[in-house]
Length: 320
Image (cartoon, rainbow, N blue to C red; front, top):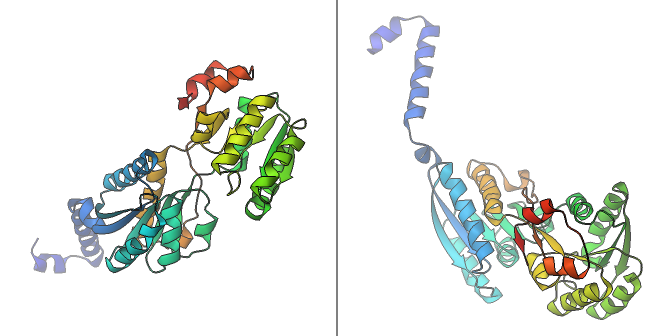
């Protein structure tokens, strides 16, 4: 439309025409162009399937939102020694965002990077993220209320839950669990340990007091030797263990709650999109998995003569 004709129109009409023209431009511009070409550094703890699934979920989410991202991937292969050179390359590479997968990668990133936003995935605990203004993400742990709800689904006759824990790492979690258990009509029996040598006595103290043993993850309880001792105790005493991971279920725990790794990546993708649009990581609360999956050990259930409903059996993500 010629500019002279527009100038002859009333002011309100001119404003309306200009607004409509701007809206048309926005519609015609591809979403990927609006989002821009984003350089994202991906720091991965190990080359295992869950890490790959999380990266795929992250990438797929951003692609669906129209982000045309260029990824630079750094693989640590489970080695802390590879973290320092990877962090140096990331800092020099001009990335707009760092996506970390796993606790090893996340620990290295938050310690070595303070001026680039970090979104973390598959981290055992999100407490570390809360201490850094440039970091947020999704943890692996489910809220205690979710854990207790599933205990009551799996073992509705159970009334007492036992926990062995390291107070230096898990006191706040145990206090939270005690309150949640009480609200659900359960009783929590706890044994505090300071070293692996304290675990056998703690198991013995709980042997006649609990219906379930809940494996809270910490540096003591996650060691392979302690896990083996706990699972042997479980089978000998017919006290089912709620494992902290599917690996524990494979080794003999009754069940574990598991995140959907691809969906965890997509959750992080949502956070990353907000950061790329200008949000501060500290303004995005670190969160728990939004989808619950579970793994069952049918052999353990049979050995302990536990009756699981058809619905629970068919709903399991994985069984052993």
